[in-house]
Length: 233
Image (tube, rainbow, N blue to C red):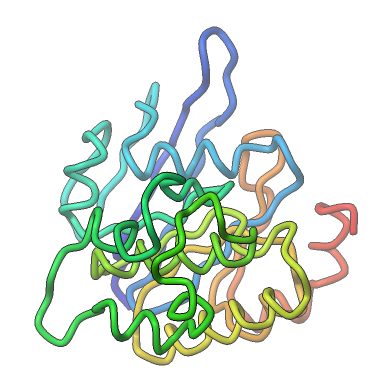
């Protein structure tokens, strides 16, 4: 299986603080790849480097076979990556519809407002509401919808279900399962091992800025106790 994104020997940090120490990982085309680790271990820093929000100090990032190390975010988006950021970050003063249109990129047979509203009926009921008027769960649905409206080749979700009510989490997991079945490539940061085991194809565990365990779905199932020890679950 080919790689839609590949990270090699990635070093990165903030100011004088080094956060990543030679990270290697690959996101397979048409698969769900999961990145796990305790808070502060470097997960979001990897995502920021991948999305062009932070320039690596060393290493390379390839997207669809093209080197994109240090490329600006708009170039990364044009290369086919869509981000659902940690904390959702919807536009608070824009309506649901305006949020969806803000970064939309049309594609034949791609995602449209109508498809987003079919996928998330709650958003259809609140299409004229402003971002700040939505609940946390509704904002997360909107953040996912906004990313899908760019019609990405790779959907990147940083802490996809953190802090959400159980019913909302289940709705989002169901949506991710449906997206996987369409063949969309997904890079997912989350901590819910039961749900991850249901949809993930490849796993990486990061600790103190280094990948300390990786494996496919069968390896994860066979080594789940070991993985839980890294995560302190």
